[in-house]
Image 1 (cartoon, rainbow, N blue to C red):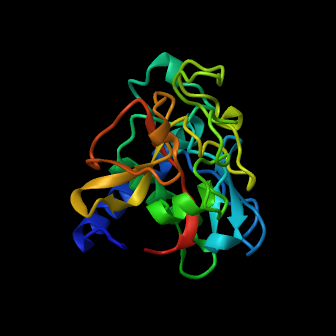
Image 2 (cartoon, rainbow, N blue to C red):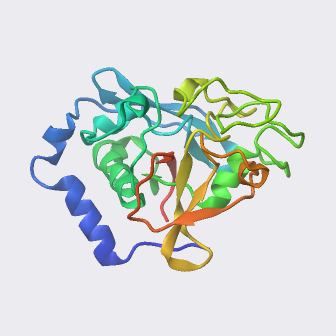
Length: 246
């Protein structure tokens, strides 16, 4: 189901990103390494050597962030305050971000880098269906790694017969990749999705599990979770895609 923000909601989010001084405060310095070409990966330079990498996923006709947005990437948009020390590493996924925060980050990326994208393509959150497709590599599989249990990769809570080696969130490059080279689709942090949860106007969808989860059902690629869009948790972050506008 395609659900969008109201026109007022979009306007408010856009204003928050493009308000006077917002670009300077975010420290924007450069654009993508090169314009996006269908079929090829995309790297976006956020300044100070901070990059965002996107993999082309033909099955979705879009680019998918190779991993969740990191603390370092999010800081190029907005300084982080009050992060727990053990969750604050540059290469750890950003947490304590609401759905609204994630949407503003995507709008900021569009504001700075839209000229490098094909017509009608935008930086945005994936839908729940898109997330499930790229997490499962386009197959009908139970978990991101396949059908057997326990996990073959991913950052979860304590599971008999499996250890990921991390107490809390893992650096995104060490969170395990599926066959399409996408990292962190198994645990680490729940990922905000664009659409609503169970037709509710008051909840947005979350997918993927997190470092806290050990219950087998939560690790499934088809498991759907949800939360009010204003909430912030230590095990919730987000991933950005480059796709047709919603």
